[in-house]
Image (cartoon, rainbow, N blue to C red; front, side, top):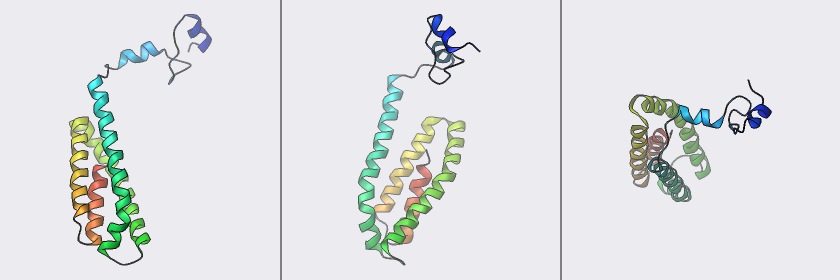
Length: 144
């Protein structure tokens, strides 16, 4: 493996991810170029995801309080959060399989539609159990 000094002496730039063994130009040639459209699509997906969290989280405490249920509001919110984290853990694996088998677009489409359906269910949930079900739908879709 060439040392970093030999790489720099030849006038090449060392790659940030493989500083001691590879060159940036060699690493780039292995992968197809990413177009602007793909980058902006990813930016849009991340923006919508963060926007949803910004709008959803302030409404969860009053929503949980309004539907009732056993335990305090804080306990019910903790239950919703724990269930979501558990479901999202396993959903990551499932969405990885969907992405590998059908492509990233299918995985993103599944995630976006699942988040939308979960949001609608969350807004119209008549009981705490429906809130949990809506969060499960959102977290299955949000594993991406």
